[in-house]
Length: 160
Image (cartoon, rainbow, N blue to C red; front, side):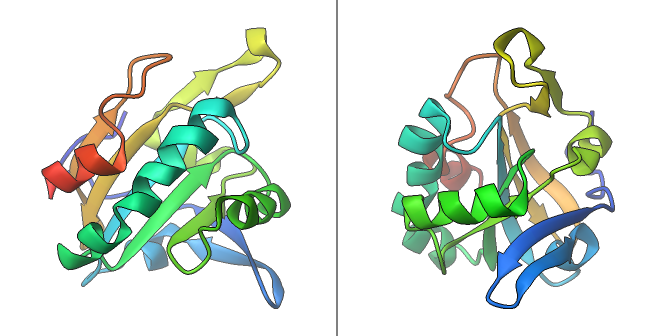
């Protein structure tokens, strides 16, 4: 698993833009000169992710931006079409970038894979949030299985 002080792994996430599905290389997302808050969820449209996790970042959007955060990104092992539909349902456009890690490449490189097979979910991401500055992880809050305590927008705001 990655840790504080590590460079964010290189991978390609996907997002739906007005021009269709586009790649979002992590090297670009977490480029030098940027402060990015990223959080990962086990799945779009799942109960805790929809009712608590994304709303916690939307509710703290202004406070996070006031702390110098350039971008807020939500990452999930779903496809870009699902992430786009979830962005619309969550009304996150223009605030939280909904990024698809459809093949789980980024999640594997982060070392944060969760096996949700017994729930019919397959391999997903553990729930976590991180602060990245200049491509380096400055804070990394990984949740215990089934928990939602350390990866909220409020918890990350305290880490800034």
